[in-house]
Amino acid sequence: MPIEPARCQAIFDQVLHASRALGIADAEAILVAGSSALTRFANNAIHQNVAERSGHLSVRVQIDGRTARATTNRLDDASIRQVVEEAVALTKLQEPDPGLLPLAEPGGTGLLACPSARWHEATARVTPAERAQAVADAIAARQNLEDCDVGGIGGTLAGNALSLAAMRATLDHVLTQKAFDRMIPLAERWTAGVEQAIAEFDVPWHVTRLGCRAEYLFSPNHPRNGTEAHDAADFELERFMHLHAMNRGILLTPFHNMALMSPATEEKHIDRHTAVFREAVQALVP
Image (cartoon, rainbow, N blue to C red):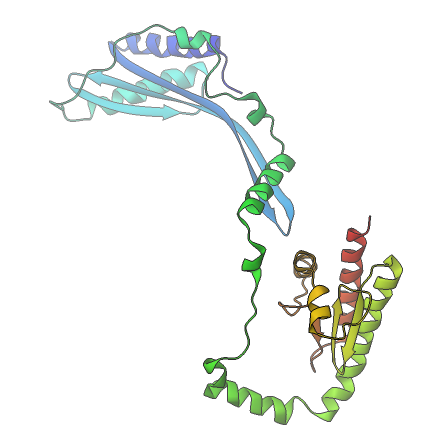
């Protein structure tokens, strides 16, 4: 809240009185006060909100072509006197400035009798949730969902020496029968968890598994051709599922809803995905 006009006038009178007591004829006082709030967002949630009300008084004096300024954020009587004394002391330490302009002439106090033109009641009463919604609206207005696409496979760079060495190492040491004997049951567990959530909330989706690879699609039936697969896509829904999972520590294949088991995958990872997937589906069901 702004400082009341009567309080502002009292502070200015104290500055004037303190200046005159020190023999200063030319003094300037600037009083600034207001409220500020800061809201921080992370993981789709407000994680910090702080607010403060503050004010500060800046005093400048002129003495024989010299000038200096002192500032304080304490507005009690003693602090006001002290800031005037500090401004005077600093001014006396300065070299005279032949080009120094005089202070403004004394004027009326008509503005003090009127509400500040910079005060807006609705802005002052904005809540953290309303600030968060305003940020979300601003982002949504500028967002193009197609910009989220990270697709793109192959190219000249994919054939570089490092990539070829990695493929050779994968074929020799990772894609082994022993690894598949472990990864395929994990994919079956992943598929069962997704199917259970789909059935529980009766959403028209399905899941497909091929070896240690599994993926869910937003259609009740398995597509029989590329057109049906294309028609089953829901870009905005896919973005939601990916973001929901990512915010909970799970990264799905970026350009579709696929999980590929690896030799490092464990049952606890599968069960974590099942819980997060169920939570996402539950949030979508009215």
